[in-house]
Every structure is written in C-alpha cells, then in structure tokens.
Amino acid sequence: MDHKLQVGDRPQIEMGSLQERSAHDFEDKSASSTSKVFQKMSSFRAAEQGPFSGTSRVGGVNMFSCACRSVKIVVFSNKLNLLMPFGPVAILVHNLTGHHGWVFFFSLLGITPLAERLGYATEQLAFYTGATVGGLLNATFGNATELIISIHALRSGMIRVVQQSLLGSILSNMLLVLGCAFFSGGLVYMKKEQVFNKSTAVVNSGLLLMAVMGLLFPAVLHYTHSEVHFGKSELALSRFSSCVMLIAYAAYLFYQLRSQSNQYVPLNEEVSPSGESAEDDDESPEITKWESIIWLAVMTAWISFLSDYLVDAIEGASSAWKVPIAFISVILLPIVGNAAEHASAIMFAMKDKLDISLGVAIGSSTQISMFGIPFCVVVAWIMGLPMDLNFQLFETAVLFITVLVVAFLLQEGTSNYFKGLMLILSYVIVAASFFVHVDPTKDDKQ
Image (tube, rainbow, N blue to C red; front, top):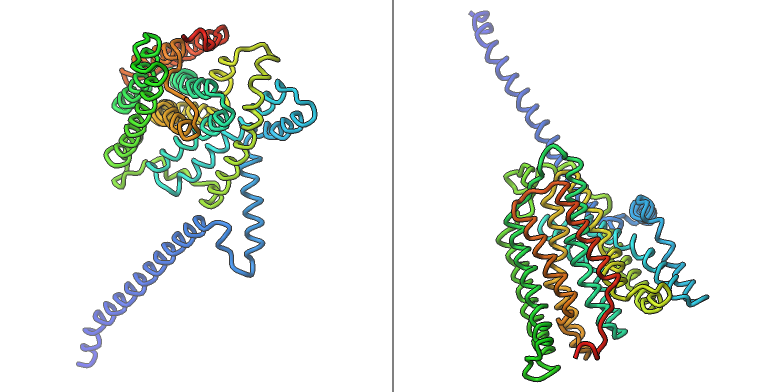
C-alpha cells in the first residue's frame, strides 16, 4: 500500500518541481528584461547628459575624450570643412592688405562650411527634441546665417543689401535648392515619379503669395504716387504689414505644431502607432544634446564675427570686381546661407523622402518671407532706420513670377528630373538678370 502511495505521489512531486522550475525561469527572464530596460534608460540618460555626467574619479578623462570625439565628428568628418581656414585668412588679409575683394571672397568661403555645420548641429539636437520641434529648429537655425548677415548690414546702414540678400535667399531656395532636389531625385528614380504631400505645398504656396502681397502693395503705392503722406505712408504701411505677417507666421507655427504634427511625414514611409517613422529606428545621434547646444553657440558666434568682415567688404568687392552690388547680394550671399539646405534637400530627395526636401526648401523660403523680412523691418524700426517693404519693381516682379512658377509645378504633387531642370534653368535666367541690373538711385525712384 505504501508502494501504491509512492507511485501515486510521484506525478504530484514531478508537477511541483516543474512549477518551481517554470517560476524560476520566469523570474530569471523578468530579471534579465528589467536589467535590459535599466541599461537602455541609463544609456539614454548618459547620452542626454553628455560630458557633464562623469563621476569625480574619471570625470576629467571622460570630458576630454568626449571633447576630442566631438571635434573629430563635427570638424574633421566633412570635406566641406576644408574651407574653414579661409575665415582666419580673411581676417589676416583685412588687417595686412585691406583688399576688399579678397576679404569678401575668403569670408564667403569661410562662412560656407560654418553654415552647413550649423545645420548639422541643429539636426543632431532634433533627435532629442522630437520631429516637430526638430523641424522648427532646422528651419530657424537653417536661416540663422542670413539673419546674422542682415543684422550686421543694418548696423552699417546697408538697407538695400538686406532687402536683396533676403530676396535672393527666397529665390535660391525656391529655384536652385528645390530644383537640384527634384533633379537629383529624378535621376536616381528615373523609372517612376516621386510623390509628395500636396496639402503641405498648397499651404506654403499660400503663405508665399501672402508675402508677395505684402511686398507688392508698398511698391505699387510708391510708384503710383498715391500716398496720403508722401514718403511716410509707404513706411507706415510696411511696418504695419510686417507686424501682420509676423502674426500670420506665428499662427502658421501653431497650426503646424498642434493641428498638423505629422504633416511632413513622407508618404512612402510606414508610420508606427506611436506616430514615429519606421525608418527613424535605424538613425541615431552622433553627438550628445549638450554637445549640439555648445556647437550651435560656437558656430553662431563665429558666423557673426566673420559677417562683420563680409558686410564691410561688399561695396569694395563690387568696385574691385566690377560686379553690381545687386548680383552680389541676390546671388552670391544666399549661396553661403543656403549651404545646409542645399545639401540636406538633395540628400533626402535621393533617399526618396521628397516631403522632407520640400519642407527644407519651401519651408525655408516661407520662413524668410514671413518671418525674416518682417523681422528685419521691425529691427530697423527699433534702430531708427527707414527700412520698408518696397523692394522696387524689378525685384518684386521677379519674386512674384518665381512664386507663380513654383506653385504651378507643385500643384500635381509629383516631381521628376525635368521639373528640377526647369527650376534650375529658371534660376540661371534670374542670375543673369541681376548681373545686368543696376540698382536705381534716389533720383530715379522719384
């Protein structure tokens, strides 16, 4: 009988041991998964804290190694940075010879890689801020070079240089940058038409047309001699319109942040339930958040320092090279500021992410027209300078026709290399027009 009990109890003993074993396995798996979660959280915290998170024992070594790694990534990883030494060369030439043509040329070369690295640091910071705020950061710091140069020009009283450089930045983004993106993407994807979000293009085209309206009315008011107070109504209208345009741009930012947070997600990418793109999992930041902020401050300060030499040498370079100031302001200066947009727009178009390319090119044009130009008018108002929105008939007509051409090409929601070639050739015509354009004097404007 005892033998029967032993035989009957054996399955229960085996079942008990199996339950204990499964419980131990579950505890081991949960412990390992918990440890992995804590490891990921600690690594993310370490990435956010950057070089300031080291302990007292190895803090100095960690900060030095992080600084060396950051300098290697930011400064020595891009071939365009070979132009960085031209910035100090421009300062040396200014102090030794004073030749304005060479100072302008070397300053132009020295600022170009700084503008591109400014965009790179902004993209790295966008990894820690999210897609929407990151897009706004890209648009803001992508145009920081133009705004810095414009403020330095305002301090020198060169109002026409400010107007023409901002106008040239809009034309360069809409025709050259977008055209190169369409052309490069069309060559890579020759057998199909690339698609983008039409609603985004329509909103930006509407804002650009509103900016054209703000620039057109003061010019028409001036040349029709229909002002109530000659010389004053034009300036008052410009300042009032600038404030309205700033309000419209603020409303656009609110609309983009709150109502259309997924507006710039490419159509050919899968979106996860959390709202993130499936392809973003493979991308990771190369530098930490604090390193990105420090590099943004360093690049902005160095660009501001070189902009002084660049602006002071514009008139001397125009007379030395026998090139109109209008051509330098509209064509040459925007090449520097749009270096980051140009590179990123082409790169995303070749990856079939045309919505991002469109957001970079058209979004930058929208920000300059709705924020950059009105902001400079308000800053000049504070400085006591009479900067208005009267960009003269020739410049206003060029901008109006450019916006119409781009709006017609974007209305289908598709792109190919031929559309890109059309935009590039249109920019060549614009450049040739400003090469033979002489800015009217005050007597000619009356």
